[in-house]
Image (cartoon, rainbow, N blue to C red):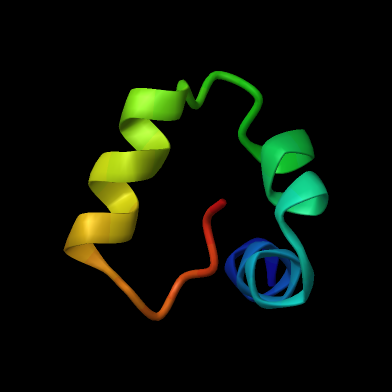
Length: 42
């Protein structure tokens, strides 16, 4: 259930994603964007 909520937050917009994972740095976001282009990191 938690995974689904996080996936929806990720699909909707980036601010919700940062609320669920506040420790993500800009560099980590860039790495995730490279690894998974379908995830809309900004």
